[in-house]
Length: 339
Image (cartoon, one colour):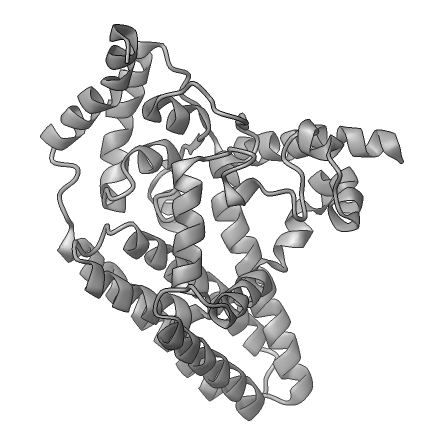
């Protein structure tokens, strides 16, 4: 390794030292105890309201509320997976499977494997599963490739279809979890399968016990659809529309994470709604940093990037969506030319 490479490689080490000196990697057990209690309490209150309302049109309001609660549980599962809550693997896995598999019907192990690969190579067209061209295309090169009929058709209009397609994201997470537990190789496969089965039995049992069949199906559609939109609205601003990478990019860890991520400005409401993932740059640089510390880390990281001349992107939430949709429209251009 050359002297220049050593200097570039040490850039993250110097930033890490500043972050550690500020005490931002320290655990926040009090914060997470309170957050888990609030999310669990509100979720329980939602299901109590569901039981008390009976077969009523007001249940659609409960469905919308529970969509938000499922999103908040997913965000807690995310923090657990990154060991922001517990240092040890065992309590992390137990809590993650209770929240993910039992709580919202999403395989914790499957999601953790997928998300780990994303963090290692964000926006890399060959290595990041989040930019696989299975439904949408993320670059013009992907659009020019030999695609299946679904991405070939959707890719032409994907900027317009993006948010409508998010209504299916909740179902996609359920189905991905079911597929994962059906195949060998998943860690604690039996436990995950049992917890997923328990979730679906309890969920559909409650719907078809309390509601008429038609109302149960309507509740399901509203709940799952809005949950998908909420999740997609949380994750879309983070990397969509940022540069995609191919091959073997000559980027060190610091630059790879900063250049492919986007921050979203906002106050406490934005922090709560997006679970701290609006500080996506800081999260990708320090995945195990407790989410309440990300706000304090942001000015340190931004100032350090300015020192090194590394572009650091931070926008409003509305602007982040505009950039993501513009990128999707441009990426699909080769498909529109074929039609």
